[in-house]
Each structure stands twice: as C-alpha cells, then as structure tokens.
Image 1 (cartoon, one colour):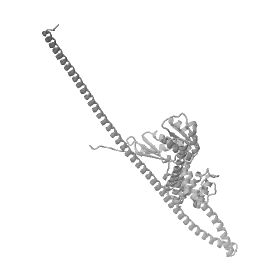
Image 2 (cartoon, rainbow, N blue to C red):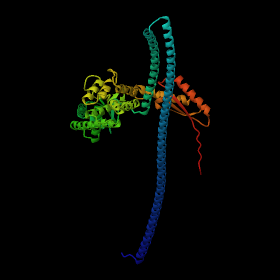
Image 3 (cartoon, helix red, strand yellow):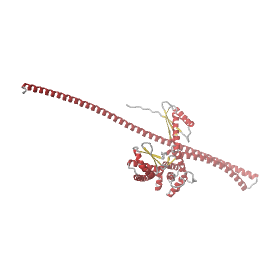
Length: 518
C-alpha cells in the first residue's frame, strides 16, 4: 500500500519543527549552564579576592605585631643594659666611698698617734727635768743625812729609778698593746670585707641524679634491650644505675660519682640520637665519651688556671684541678670555691703587701686533694700536700694545702691567708645549701620592712644583705622625712631581724621632671 505524498510532506514538516524546537531547547539549556557557570566562576573569584584581602590584612597585622615585639625587645634590652651600668656605677661609687672613709679613718688615727707621741715626749721631757731636780735634792740630802759615799748614793738612786721606770714602761707597753690589738682587729675586718665585696662567684649545686629526655616511650624498650641485655651492658660499662620507670619522656641516671654520671649521661644521649643500641655499640660509645671527658676535664683545669692567672702547673695538677668541677662540698662546687679562694687570697695578700700571685696559687690548689681522696687514704689536706710536693710546688703552697683546716701548726702567712679566704668562701650567704634559704629569707624580710613605711616606692637589698637601698617619692615627702624614715628603718631592722655585722640603710629622694617637645 503506497503512502500519499501529503502525508510524507506533513511528516517531514513535523520532524523539522520538532528538530528546530529541540535545537532551541538545547541552546537554551547551554545558555543557562553557561550563565550558571559564569556566575559560579564570578562567585569563586569574589571569594578568592576576599580571602586574599583577608590574608593580606592578616599578614600586615602579623608583621606589625612582630615588628612591635622586636621593638619592645630592643627597648627592654636597652633598659637592662642601662640598669646594669647604673648598678655597676653604684657599686664603684660605694667602693670609692668606702675607700675614702677608710683613708679618712687612717689619717685621723695617724694624727691622733702623732699627737699622743708628741704629748708623751713632752711628758717624758718634763719628767726628766723633775727627776734631775729630784736626784740633785736626794743626792744632797743623802750626803747630809746618811754620810754615804757618792758611789753608794748613786747606786741606790739608780736602783730606785730603775724600779719606777720599769713599772711605768710596763703600763705604757700594756696600753699600747691593747690599742694596737684594736687597730689590728679593725684593719683585719676591713681587709676581709673589702676582699669579699670585690669578688663574688656563682656556685652550682649538683645532685646525685641526671635526667635524660627521650623522644618516645618506645625508646625505653630499646634502652632496656632484649631480656635487659642493653641496660646491663650500659651499667657495666659506665658504673651507674639507670632508672626507667613510668615517668613519660625521661630516663634517670644515678651515681654518687659525678664524673661517671656525666659520662653516662653524654653516652646515653649519643646512643639515643644515633638509634643503634646494642652491647657492642654501647662499649664503643662509652669509651669514646670517656676520652672526650678526659679532654673536657683538662680543659676545665686550664680555664681555671687562666682565670686566676696561674701558669706553669704540672699536667697532672691541671687534670686534678679539672676534676674538681665534678666535686661538691655541702652542695658548693669545689672548683668554683677554689677559684674564689684564690681571688680572695690574692686580694688579702695584696692588702698585706705580700705576693698576691703566690697567694692565688695557694688558694687555687688548697683543695686539690679532694680530686684524689678516693684514690688514697687520709684527709684531703694531707693528700693534696703530698701531691703538690710530688709535682714540684713550692713549700708555701704545700703547707697551705696541709694546714688550711688548722690540722697542723700554722707557721707561714700564706697558710693563714688561705684559711681565712676558705672560711669566707664557705660561710658567705648563698655559698652552701644549708644557709641559702635563710639568706634569701633575710633579703625578703629586709625589703619588706622598708616597703612597709609610708612614701617608700621601692627597696633593694644589695651587697649580700649588708646594704638596704630605699627609694621614696619626692612628691609626697620632704628631705626631713627622708632622714626620719632612714633612722626608723634602721631601728626596725635592729629590732626585728638577727644578722651578722652591720646593715647600711640608704634612702634616696630624687625629683624627676619630664617634658615633651612637640
């Protein structure tokens, strides 16, 4: 059956219309997708621009904050430097004032002594004249009454005069001995105080354990090793106890010998950093660390000798001196103590007109026996004296090491100087642990007493508590009130505190006016 032509025409026309409509619909969809995509791109671009703006703003703020922090650090550093310089200048001014006061006291003492000598000479001349007259009178009277010969009368008069002069001479000698003893005591106190004030050293306190940080708790198992072989090998090679407990991130090394403990600490740090932990590696690292420790000890000995300007020491003496860094006495580091004794001994010797270099050498080596007291029998003074004598030191140095604790009869001045310097270094506030807390508490009490008075802005205890410096407000007080506060603070210290020696109270009232030029 054939299809009529008009049907075909209608079908074709319908298909064309449908195709055109589909094309227009697809174009419309593409256009909407394109518009939607464009809007999405624009929105993303806007968000990106906004984020970039915020990021730039944050970077600018961070840069501003960082720059401000740097400026504040520089300003704080400058203020700290100015404060340190001011404190240094204050100390120098105090030292100059003390020296001036000492010179004035000495001048007054000399003038007084000269005046007394002149008076005594005049008195002696007058007594001579009186005695001459008396002798002439007695001679005439004796001749008249007794009928003695001239020789007999002369002998009797001389005997009487000798008894009288002997009594007067003894009284004068006792008087001058007492006066000289008082002068010697005062001079000795001034010398010791001057030497202590001119030198102060930090003292380190050691313990019997060292703490080692580890990256994670897994490292504890590697340190212990299979069935504990690594930790046993380490303890055997170093001679210490390794304590591994539940404390996270740390391992404790314990030993009474600080040298062994330091070697163990350094070796364990190397093993942890290296990561290879087994008995063979442990022995290798411990041997290497021991060699490094020997070099370090020798270096410490040389540095100590250079610090006090001592040269020509035997190599063995230098090594023993370096070992003192790892020795403590009542928590006081023995090497720093020896250096301080050396400086104090040198300054005391200079004040006495003796050899300051020899005194420093005696002070530096006086405790050298403590570095070898585990190797020989006896106390450290005898061990040190034997070592110094063996290595060719002078007899003064040997005797100072032997007698600085009054174990033997002191026959040489340098031994007495070292003993005095040793006592000063060991007993000064802050040197040893048993006096540190009491010393800090006294400093706090001093400042608290001063700040409790009206008008006081700041109070500082300085010179190891021998001076209290008080700053009062210039606007709220007067000079008369400052003098009264100074006296009241001194009285309060006397009533409320117990302290050795004296405390100097200084009150500062300063008016500062500041204007800004624009």
